[in-house]
Amino acid sequence: MRYLAILLLCLPVLALAARDVADPIGALEHQNDDDYNEALETPWVEIETQVKEGPKDADLTPLEILHLPPGMRLYADLKHLKVDKRDYVTRLWLVIRSRAGAYNASYEGIRCATREYKVYAYYNPKRHRNPLRKVRLPRWRAIYKNGWRAELARDVLCSDTNPRDAQAIRVRPQAEAADYRSPYE
Image 1 (cartoon, rainbow, N blue to C red):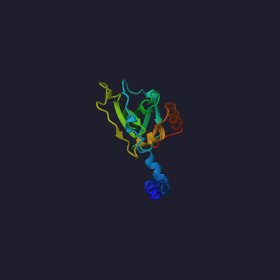
Image 2 (image 1 turned 60 degrees about the vertical axis):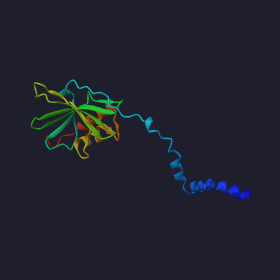
Image 3 (image 1 turned 135 degrees about the vertical axis):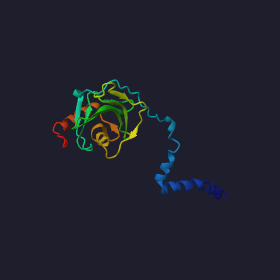
C-alpha cells in the first residue's frame, strides 16, 4: 500500500520526465519563457538632424546606379557623409542630374535596419530666393524593392542591416565610378 502511495505521488514527475525524453526540444522552448523581459529593450531613438547648407559641386562623387530613369545620373556628397553610431542612420546629400541640365538635391537619411529613408531637405541652386528648403515634418518611408534607393542602400551604404563605415563608403564608389561611363551620357 505504501509503495502504491509513493508511486501515485511520483507519477506526475515520471510523466514530465517521459515527456522531456520524448520531446527534448519542447522542454527547452518552455524553459526560458519567463526569462525574456521586453521592458529591458532600448527603443530606437533618432537623433536630431540639422541641415544648414546645400551640397557643393566639388564634393559630389558620381555613383553607378542602374535603376535611375534614362538620362539621369546620381551623385553623392561623400565628403560630408555621416554614419551616426547613436541611431545607425547614414545621412548624406544625394543629387540627381539629367543630360538636359535638371538638378535635384535632397539631404536624406538611410536606415539600413528597416530599409527606410527620410528626406530632411531639398536644394536647388537655380532657386535664387531660397535654394535650401527644409522639410517641415520629415517622415520615414519604405525603400521600394527595385528602385534606385534600394540599389544605393544595398550596394553602397549598407552591409545587410547595418550601415557601412563612412570611410568604406567613401572609398568604394570612387573605385567603381573611375571606370564607369553612364549609358545615358
